Every structure is written in C-alpha cells, then in structure tokens.
Amino acid sequence: MKVGVLISGRGSNLQSLMDACATPGFPAEIAIVISNKADAAGLDIARAAKIPARVISHSDYPTRESFDAALDAALREAGAEFICSAGFMRILSDGFVEKWRDRQLNIHPSLLPAFKGLHVHRRVLEAGCRVTGCTVHFVRAAMDEGPIVAQAAVAVHPGDTEETLAARVLEAEHKLYPLALRFVAEGRTRIVEERVLIDGELASTQSILPVPPL
Ligand code: GRF
Image (cartoon, rainbow, N blue to C red; front, side):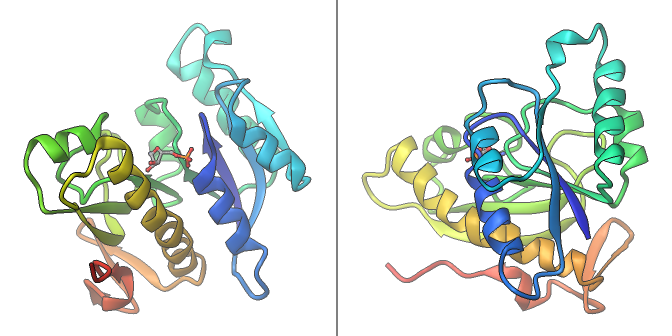
C-alpha cells in the first residue's frame, strides 16, 4: 500500500513509520512526505532516506479548500492510496476528508475520546489522570474524531512534567502507529457502525499496547 505522510514538524512518527516500512515484509511503503511548513525537520528525515518530500505551504493558498486541493493533487501524483497524518497541524476541509474517507489515519497523544485538541499532556496532568496514552484512528471531519484502530496506555508518574510525560507517550506512539498501519495495510480492519473491527473482532487485544510495569 502506497502511503502519503502529512507532517508539520519534528517528524519522529514519520521516522517510526519509515523504519517499519523498511522492515522486510511490511505491507506499506511511503510514496511521499508532504509538509505545510518549509522548516519542518521531518522533511530532512525523508530526504535523507531518499523519500520524495514536498512543501505545500498553506499560506500560499487563499482558502482551506484550495490548499486541500493542492494536497490532494500532490498525493495522487505520487501514487498515494492512503494517508498517515503524523503531527500535521492543519484542519482538513470536509471535502478532502470525504475524498479520503477510510483511507486516512491520524495519531493523537491521548486516549481518545478524552483530551482532543492541543496541550494534551498539560491538561492530563491538571486533571490528575493516573493513566494516559495515545490513539491511532481513521480521520473524520471533526478534529481528533473517528473510528479507533489501536491504543496504547501509558502511566503518569509522580513528578511528571509536561515534557517527561510527552516523551513517555511519544515512545508508545512510535510503536503504535506502525502497528495500526500494519493492520490496515494487511486488510485486517473493517469499519462497522464507526467502530473498527480487527480480524472481525472489536477491541482486539492485538490493537492494545499495555501499560508497561513501573
Ligand atoms: C505527536 O505527539 C503526535 O501524536 C501529535 O503531534 C506530535 C507529532 O510529533 N499529533 P512528531 O512530529 O511525529 O515527532
């Protein structure tokens, strides 16, 4: 399965997807990386691995729809059949989301549907949560919403700061995204009533990464 990866920044999830795709027998390959920001470090990660990388800057387009049309054209030109958003910080238009319906994944650093949006780890700490995590889900029009493919639980430790917690969740993200992409690329997922079945089962234990022991 040819995948287009959308990024806006650091690109550590992109790196984890690239590493997975480079392992023998992985059922997906990255056809193109697109960033809406020219200075995204993830672009260098892609270029160093000789993966086509393009900047499509949202500020060059008068409307969200015209930006999304350029994104769509670049993805199709590269032969992408599927999209992985990995730290892509733009809201996509309903039209784009519909075009790629059930063919786009996103990763979010919380156990959705809790803590959608920005500043997740700060809000998790403020709420006094003992457990947090990350989610890979199919993309729908509403931000950080859509059928859940896989989740990883991560413990909040005493004394955690936003930074230490973010780092621990990020480690889990790097395992979870390749796992979720594998399920989808192997054709093992099916969306029924907006829930994802894996091998015909809801909440397959294979799509849960447990809290590591303290
Ligand atoms: C990750 O925490 C991801 O869950 C969120 O944005 C961050 C992107 O990090 N959507 P990176 O660019 O993949 O390193």
